[in-house]
Image (cartoon, rainbow, N blue to C red; front, side, top):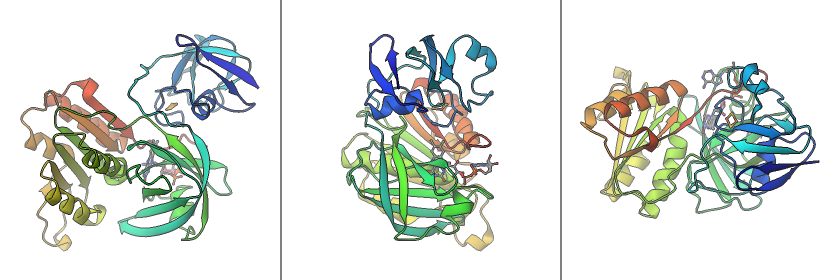
Length: 341
Ligand SMILES: Cc1cc2nc3c(=O)[nH]c(=O)nc-3n(C[C@H](O)[C@H](O)[C@H](O)COP(=O)(O)OP(=O)(O)OC[C@H]3O[C@@H](n4cnc5c(N)ncnc54)[C@H](O)[C@@H]3O)c2cc1C
Ligand code: FES
């Protein structure tokens, strides 16, 4: 057992043998900036001012050896070898949600095919989980000792229910090897959460643009629902991109929501519609091009982007072209786990 002290605010917390700095912090109610919790984003970079860490499986691309030699470490991968004093490098946003990370168990109550290679998984938790719209959980893949991140798609109102949208990755351990293979209703699942700092924390004065690619819709559905319930934004524009009609889902749900709330606009877009898809009345084109066509200027607006990294990068570029301030662009990238994790 070691103790970690965060320089600046003096927060201190215990870390068990083999536990990472970030895991210990979040379980003890001490907030440290983070995003992916798998060593791929770099949001959790810490400067180790005093003490030693084991970098574990830290990927070289995220934290090169030269950075490690100067005392940098990833909070989500580093395990203390002694007591530590650390300093965060990302700004600690006072408005981000701070819910204590915990292990949970749950029962599968819904497992439906909702789009091409896409499933909706609904879990009934054994005990309550408080989370903020936009956050995610790690589902423990049975028998292989790995976990994968999935964003909650439901708003936080019901603390016993979690909805996830999951896309199959060919050959993937969690998806092809479990969720799309032999997982079934009534089975038990182990998970931990909540995690992440993506989400609409405060009431917004200006319109909000949300862009999701594929199952990147999941946290945006949670955010939209929560924002409408609590009147958090004067106007919201939700874009959901897919290649063909079979890639989109919850179209009727969002169409009805847009009819019920005049300030909410839903724009599904297909990049490669097929004549077999039948009549398509939504937009056609890359979802980012559709956004560019819709707005002459995005100055003063904010955006929430989620999905494959390439889509998120393209969306950031498009919004900057339309003069959205970079500090008002928030993103969650569905990065793949590093090889061997
Ligand atoms: C913060 C966060 C939130 C996430 N939320 C969701 C979510 O709500 N819904 C969802 O469907 N996914 C989500 N993901 C992705 C998810 O965690 C898994 O990475 C994904 O389901 C693949 O896991 P797997 O074990 O099946 O594949 P793995 O066994 O990890 O991968 C198998 C092979 O496929 C490659 N691979 C994995 N993913 C991709 C990819 N996307 N594109 C190309 N190659 C890939 C890997 O590099 C590997 O070679 C999220 C990821 C992060 C970091
Ligand atoms: S690299 Fe640690 S949270 Fe992403």
